[in-house]
Amino acid sequence: MNNETLGRRRGKAGWWFAPLLLLPLGAVAQDKGPDKAKVVEEVVARVNNDAITRGDVEHARAQMVEDVRHDCATCTPDQINERVATQEKNILRDLIDASLLVQRGKDMNISVDTQVIKRLDEIRVDNKIASMEDLERQVTATGVDFEDFKNNIRNQLLQQEVIRREVGSKIILDHADIVKYYNDHMPEFVRPEQVVLREIFVSTEAKPEADQATLRKKADGLRDRVKAGEDFGELAKRFSDGSTAKQGGDLGTFEHGQLAPNLEETVFKMNRNDVTEVMETKTGFLMLQVEQHYPAGQQPEEKVENEIENKIYETKIQPAMREYLKTLRADSYVEVKPGYVDTAAVSGGSIDEVPATPDDTEKKKSKKKNGA
Image 1 (cartoon, helix red, strand yellow):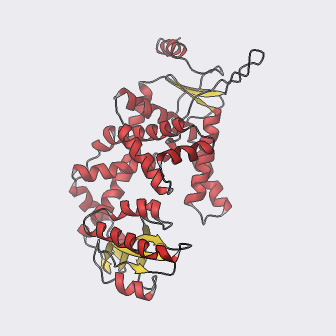
Image 2 (tube, rainbow, N blue to C red):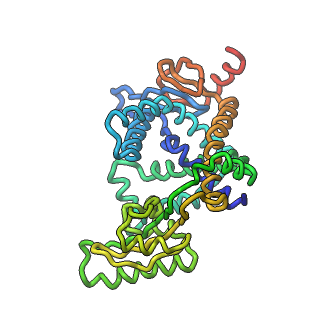
Image 3 (cartoon, rainbow, N blue to C red):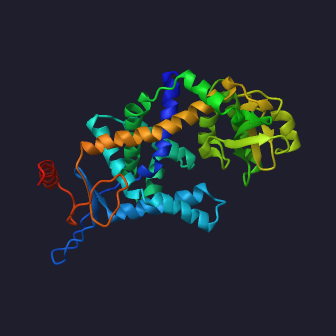
């Protein structure tokens, strides 16, 4: 497997660690004047000089619940509650791990400034915002400080880069591993004829008739860019008006009988990476790419090699991450307030409800090492 492939695979670790990406901002003392006591948020854990507050835990839980509902739109309330119960026990562990990864990234002097700018621009384009100034205004209007917004993105990218360098780079897959998996799981790869499709959709809905030609030109231009070698999925993320844009236009896998007859006749004659002509619909202009085309029967090993690589990688990355985080914890000062659960088995300790300071933390760290 070449380095480019490894780089793409390692990106999946970012997905696995998605719960870690909302980082604690630390305890905030609000001064309400000389005659008012400072309100200090409850600190539930300290990670070296960083503090994780009760508010951070509650915010992470709310985000997790929202993600579960989004990822399982067809689930019953009981199924959603079951998933939430399974995941919420690890919320504090994940926040601690996130803090450790960010601190490690800073210790390694990793700079992600260029990636932050790129990510902000992707957010701007995805949300069809005209300028970066407008993005800042819209973020601020939600009550979020724009510098905090950027810092959260920076921390996410730091985590991903640490994972890529420190964990993903050490997971090397042999072709022999792929062949063995294929031979051991051959029934998995017996399939009816299938196509995996992606879309780019340019909407004309509620647009004036005078804009139709311009929108058609936009769709044709995007097809030309794909034919010239640009990545279909990246163009879909940036320019598609379809609901699948954030997933790179991914529509899923289809068998015969699951598509409209005119589409089925077209796409089942196409090969992998072929792109349809731009098709006019009632609401816009559509083009499809055949990401994969599986013939009926036993799929040959080379046809499913990338799929197998991903399966093997995902089984290896999670235990590798937990082992790596153990080493970070062993070299760090981590303290959890009694009554809160860290499923990575850090012992509880007494924590005063005040923000962490470098001096206090260093003293406690020294005491811990000396057995005090």
